[in-house]
Length: 238
Image 1 (cartoon, rainbow, N blue to C red):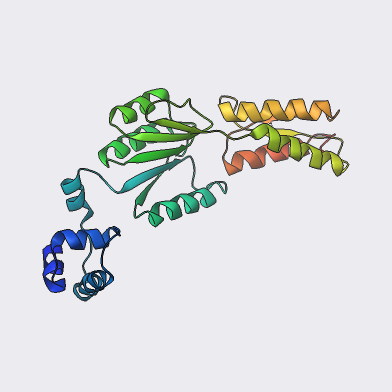
Image 2: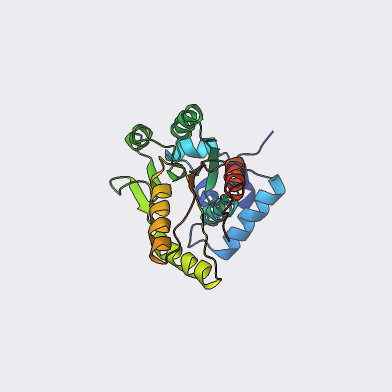
């Protein structure tokens, strides 16, 4: 049977509140007290009951990260960084994958509310305003990436795409390329539209008029199909 925090406290000769402070890495704990508590934890193989803690404190230790597709090579580094930042602060991560499905996205939204997450980082465009409103109504804060306006419980990380695109165009031109194609993201995606417009404008300014300009979703197989479509043309990029 699992040991309780009271039993750990008895073994260490301290109060359960002190055990709680040690496990939560609260400052101002005497080194000797911390040593005794951690030794008792190891000896009893004590594991925190996160559900009990949630009931006691009224708050969860969960932050959520919502992505579109875990197979997309864009996301692993983001997941790794998000998880590392959360763990450094003694929080856990609930990773949700929408697969670009409205039904699955709706289920994810319900799961976030049921799990009482403290906040959500949204890295997918499939989250609609209605879902956002339901989460904020539940007191859950959200962080978007170039997708929404900041307001109560909603933050937005803006990326200077135009600067990066300008540097990419200069690099392509410096290499001597004269025929350029664009494979853009979904035609309904705000970020994809911004990037496509910046690419077309920047390339045209350098007399590198892009052709063709194709839209596709963010799946790997869709990108591969778009590449094949570009290479099948007589005047493919060079």
